[in-house]
Image (tube, rainbow, N blue to C red; front, side, top):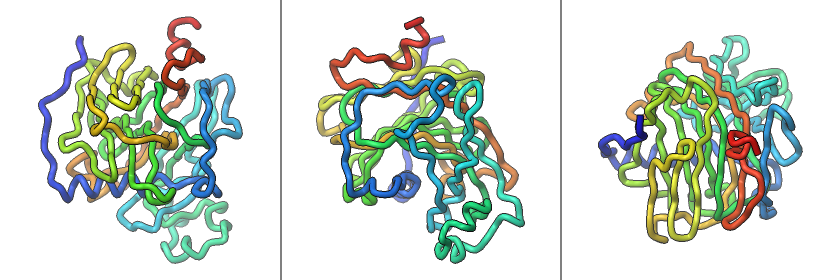
Length: 292
C-alpha cells in the first residue's frame, strides 16, 4: 500500500505555540553542553551490538513546568538484546514528591527514584552538534493514547539559540501514521502533516529518515519519500543536537496526541541511529537492512 499524506488540518496559533514550548522544554542538555559546540562526526550506533557509548547521554531531570507530565530517568531506558528499550510508566504514589522538593534536590531524591511528575520515561541525547546530512533511525514506537515517540534534532534557548528543530514523531493513538514537523525561530509549520503509512509502525522496528540540506528537507519511511519542503526559507539553519524520547501528552497536547490516562504505560524499542553528512559514504542504519 503506498504511503500517502492525509488531508492537512489546521491548528490554532495558541495550540501551535504550546507544542513548540513543549518540544523546547523537553530538550535540555548534558552538563557543559550549552558552553561547548563540538561538531559531531559521522556515526552509526547499532545498539543491540554496541550498546551505549560515551557519545550518548541519558537524561535525568524533571522540568519545572507543571503541565509537562514526564520525568526523565535513567531507568526509563534499558539495554536489552534487541536494542534500547524506552519504558514510560505511571509514578507510584510513594515516589511522587512536590516540585519544590525536586527543585531543591542535590540528586539524592532522583537517585532514590523520586519525581514530581505523574510519569517517568527515557530520553537519549547525542553529544556534539550536527548539520546538513542524512539522519536515520530504526525504531518501534509505543502505542497508546497520549504517548509520543520522537526522533528529532533540536537547538533552542537553553543553548542561546532560537528554537530550530526537525521532527519525526509517532502519536500512540494511531501508529499507522507518522507526524513530521520543523521549527524555524520557534515557528512550526502552519499545517504539519500527519502522514498515513499503510502499516502499523508499532508492529516491529522499521527504518525512518530525513535529509537536511540548505535548500530542502525530505522525510522517508523505509526507502519511500513521504514529505518534503523546498526552499531555503523553509529549512532550519544548523547546527542542532540529536534526541530520541518517549513521553506522555497532557491537557496542552489533547488536540494533538490525546491526554494520556493516569495509568498509561508503553514501550518503544530503538535499534539504530546514524548520521552521514551530505556527500558522505559512511555506514548508515539502512545498510543493515541491505546486508551491508
